[in-house]
Image (cartoon, rainbow, N blue to C red; front, side, top):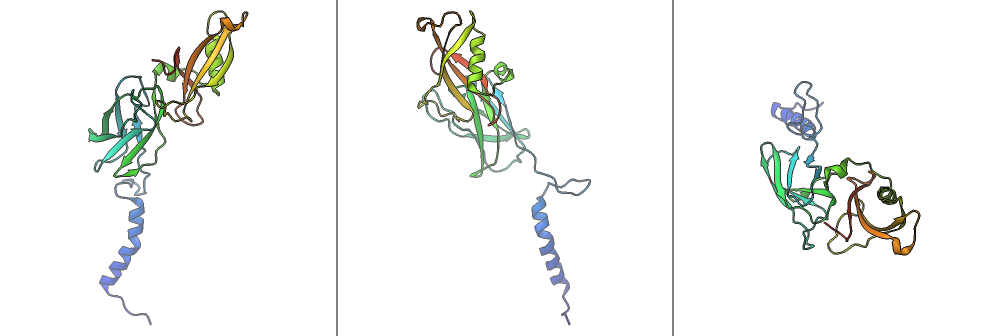
Length: 224
């Protein structure tokens, strides 16, 4: 015959059974109407696109106040080719906020968020180039983008040569999201070497698998 269990022991057993479910649901993540567990709020980082050479006013939604939070743009460097340090954010008016110096180079920079020494899972990037470039038609490949740029030149120009520009100490951008090409082009009716022109093209995309956008064309590498 099973022994009789006292009231205190019964309460302890019930608490032990209920506690794991309470932990899984997490405080504050239950729908008040149905009582069902809710998914944690999505982390949203703004701006998605910001103009080059201007400070970036960062706003992060979806994280509760308390503790410390810092944000880093992976691969972003200063004009002296030094990595931009993580930016401490402060909780103000319902969101985490801070102002970051502009990266030296245009492009797309993956966002890294660290809270209390722990890196948060996040798939987001800040695009440092003009909104006009962001709105333009994207291209499946870098070569397609180069041919499109050349086709808009005067005298019915054609693409003659293309190669990827090698990385320098200044350029620590994520190669999955950023590319720089050097191309040669010439009038379609006069492809002589003496008539060829050259240009550097910078391409970027906001995530792996997205289409490439032409964000800068310059006469010198990393031109402003």
